[in-house]
Image (cartoon, rainbow, N blue to C red; front, side, top):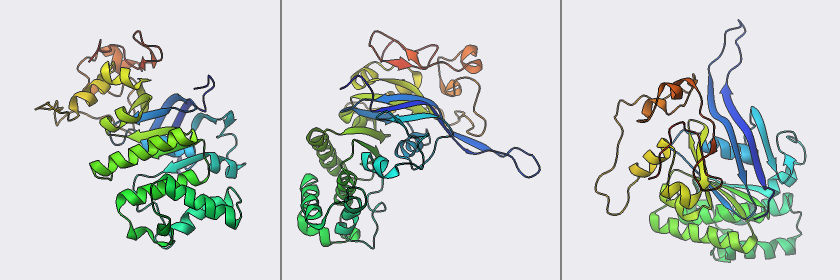
Length: 327
């Protein structure tokens, strides 16, 4: 990996709603992403994990330009995507691609696979007919699908096959970075393994960089070089994958790992059903995990803990005043 990050996210935030009514009354606002700072280096896979509603997908959409941040910077390959919004979108669309969670719904049911895959070849790469045909055969081979499938429609494929087509569509534009938003969550376990193996092969073959969004800890652990844990729109822990999973420091990461099913574990740690969750319309002044944390103090409720280096492992950071010593 090079020293300069391919993708740099600096204090990014996304607020939905807000503003004022005609009579000057404030409108409610949801803070979906708050003060997120991350780096992704060329050739690595950054896993982003957290429970539903933590801001993972919103962050993914901001990276690929489907949603605009309301604050902060997103710099890709030396270019500020926020400052360049509306400029040179063809180049950005080619270099940053997205794989959606629902493989069937992400494909146009009225178009053949050939038409779907040809779109980026025509509009982004400007390939001629002969070059497009060669590229289509290469793409189908890369995701282990037969060339004759090009004349079929999305409804004729299983979920796993449809997701392979979605990956081929992302690959068609010859991107540098692919954002995968829950790419295997809708698939059976055996099919998940097939898709993950394809993604691993493609990464090595084409020199790709991945941002892998998931709530499945086992999947994130198996594919990620580094892991960022999100809670209530913020990154609460980040570090090398093996370190985060073996020695989680933030109480939320600790809870996630202890709550996940694992071979040989007969019981899972569950929270009280009456546990208070933070209000997205009114974020707390301190740590959002305060009400759920067994280690909280008054300091946690009054002050937001900074995301800072922790432990002996370089690059392992956690936003906690009272971190765990290990798993």
